[in-house]
Length: 278
Image (cartoon, rainbow, N blue to C red; front, side, top):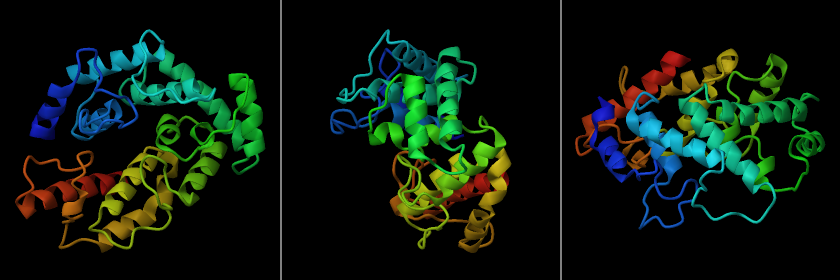
């Protein structure tokens, strides 16, 4: 029912003819362009849209053209040599979130599988090994946070169920223990559950957990999240993350939050999906 919400209709109306929504990654002019292409895709995905829906198919075609450099994303090009590699990572991630068969995006994922398995081969994140493998894969290495950060939305999404088990164990633990959480999703260590449940930080925390749940062989490490959720029921089988989580990405799902019961319904829906996965 969320696919037919006013939120989905509004986003689809804002989609450009080429398939994108203004800037791809950077919210440079929020008053003029309220949504980036990434934000719009994440929102539509949360509302239930898939590659079978025309707006997503149109967007993925746009992303593929950008990946092939037939078109350029409209964002400001950062002045370092790894910018194009980072763009490839972003584009491939979003293409594969909707279309797991895209051969061009799969080539980018293969690069990052190689990079990750070499970087963590010692049993922990090793920057020296990361530099060595980057020189091999990209032909050079230029130190920039964009390329060297591993606990972030793109890597976590791209690599789900793609690594060998040994590397996956180490990579997953690395993400769980990262003090800054998952870059572009939340900002706190995932092993430390939020103190306040009815808060936007709790919603962001759940966003990171939802990504980790895609790692089928690692979900047993997230049972502490299940306990935290069960401890924060407002009554049997109901949860409320509060009014402040209305961020236009994860929430709202229902058309109208003027009634508390709609907000509680949306929050409960999200939590139940997580509990079912765990």
